[in-house]
Every structure is written in structure tokens, then in C-alpha cells.
Amino acid sequence: MSDLPAWGSGAPGGATAANPGPPGGAGTGGAGADRPPAARVALAHDYLLVMRGAERVFAAIADMFGEAPILTLLYDEQALGWRFRGRSVTTSPLQRLGADQRNFRRMLPLYPAAASRLPVPPCEALISSSSAFAHGARAPAGAVHVCYCHSPFRYVWHEHARALAETPAVLRGPMRGVLAMIRRWDLAASERVDRYVANSLLTRERIRSFYGREAAVVHPPVETTRFAPGTPGDELLLVSEIVAHKRVGVALEAARRARAPIAVAGSGPDHEALAGAYPEARFLGRVDDEELARLYAGARAVLVPAMEEFGITAVEAQAAGRPVIAARAGGALETVVEGRTGLLAGLDDVEDFRRAIERLDRLPFDPQEAVANAERFSVGAFRRALRAELDKALEQGPRTHRPQRGRGKGGG
Figure 1 (cartoon, rainbow, N blue to C red):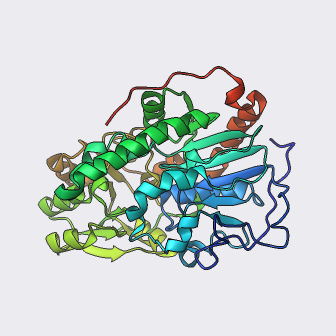
Figure 2 (tube, rainbow, N blue to C red; figure 1 turned 90 degrees about the vertical axis):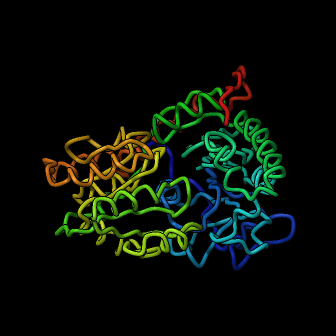
């Protein structure tokens, strides 16, 4: 794509938490809001509320197309405005309800329709970054839709049972109906995507199983230059959203049994309960990028107990010259060199994680080897691979002009 210019209109002043736009949908704002933007690419992401792994990937995509308009269901300008300053950010009408990271899940039934109605401006390509709803945005006629998929929506597919188990008993019936509705919408939305790009082999398999679609694999970009080796201490580190599927309790219990100090960077709905159950652990809450880099460099090792589709944390830890103890599943199989840059333990196996912690001192670990391994997932590598996939999509044209493939039968 070296022959293509930086795409997008770049008009600032889009709908934000402070400026939700006119009724019926958020506007693009700016002096040129009443005429079609000149953008060749439009970008969409589920919601921009906190800067986690998926948001960091989307930020890297946004940097590739510096003037492309951004569409999202919800945007917390106070939390993320620094990252998207000067960009046109268009939100859904749900923005006016004032949701944030603490309560956005309450609007779950409303997101499919809102995503389908995001006002994508005229463009040649829509690039969505999706782990839930953004792949449901509708590309304009004649445009191609490339979805960078972090995961099919876990709560209607591979974690359907967990979603119901976490719902109060009295609400499980209605929740079952909501998830069934979203699942039907999700399948229909998948048919409108022209090209899927998966963030890992695991996600590729799930796209194939659930949607009946093939996908190329482009590993997420990791800002490896943000990190550097330092002087490690005695404390283990866990960097995670504190929610059930991240299995934070597995890491905390393993550290307790190994009598190893541990710090947790992150927050979420399970924060209070786990902090009460593990008073010996240090719960740091959300930390900024500078503090996170310092924490990585000073950690004895970084624990990743969940089965991650990719797992940016594991790569960031290695970029900071620290070993990783991760679940032997998902993205860690692609990012951690077992016995060299880290150790793998059985998923949900507390005792196996404990043994791995106790084996750390016997690991022939070289910080520079870990740094070199992390470089395989650099921002530059991501940009080259994603541009190649976009080129292919543009060459093939919209999928509606080609035979439709059958849907998969994956389930939850």
C-alpha cells in the first residue's frame, strides 16, 4: 500500500462523552460535517473506555491511517482523549446514556442495533477492530470491510456457560434470551464482513468454527520500545482486568501456596472480592504507561493465568526482559518460548502454577533473549502484515459480489 496516501478526512471535534452529537446518531462535527468526508478508510472499534490490549491494537491501526474517521459505540474522552486527540470520533446514540467502564455491560442488549447503525461515512474500506460488536458496522456500498478480530464475542460463543453462571439466578432466563438474540445477530454480521484477520491461531480457529469463515493471522502490535530491562525484585506481577475469565484467582492462589509476594495492576468487577480474599497481595489499581513499564522491569516474573487469544501482557513482559509464567493454552503457545523466555502451566491448575513459580530460579533465563523474542511482535511487523491484508481485500472487492460461504456450527 505504499502507493496510497494517508487516508481520512481528519476533521476534529467528533462526538465524544462531552459532545454526544445530535439526536438520532452522533455527528462528525467540524466545519465540514455536512458534506461527505474525503476519507478512503473509516475505522470502527467496539468501545473506547479504557486502554487495554484491544484498545492498544486499535490505537496502532488508527496511527496507520492518521486522518481516518473513528466510529465507536462509547467513548470516554476524559480517559482516552489524550490518545485520540485531534481525531474525528463518532459515537452511537448510546453515548448520551453516560456509560463508562464500570457500568457499560448493563446496556448489552442495545449494542447490536447500535453497531449496525453506526454512521460509517463514504469510504473505500472500513476496518473494524472487534471482540464483540464492531464487526457489525455496515460498510457503504462498494466498500470492503476488513475486520481485525481479537475474538468472536466470548459471551455468546466459547464462554456462553460462564456468562449465564455469572448472572443472578432470577435473571438467567432473560439473559439466555438476550445472548441468543445477540448470537443470531453476530452470525448475520459475520456474513457482511469481506475479510477477517485474526490476532492468533486460536482466534482463527474460533472464526472458522463459529462463523464458517477463514482468516489470516496477523499478531497484534506490541509497543516494545516502551519497555527496557531493569533490576528485578522479588515480587511477581499480574497485569489484568480483574474479571472472572482472566482467572486472577488462580495466580493469586498459586503465589500464596508458593509463599511468593505478588502485585496486581488492573481493576474490574472482581477487584474488591479478590482483594479481600488475598490481603497479602498488593492491588495497585489501574496504572499509567510509565508506571507499568517500571513494574514490568522490576518484576521477578509476570503471570498470565488466563487463556488469552493472543496476550499482549506476555510480550510486554518479555520486552522488559522478564520471564513469563502463562497458561499452556491460546496465545502463550505462540509468544512464550517454554524453558527459555518463560514457563507454561496447566490452565486452571493452581498447583502447576505453584510449581512453575518455584522453578523460576532454575530457568536458564536471558533477558536479551526475551527482548529479541518480543521483537517478533513489533508495531512495524504488524503494520506491514495488516497493510498486506487490506491490499488483498481491496483487490478482491466486496464479498457480496462473490459466492457466500456457509456458516459454522460452533457453539457455547
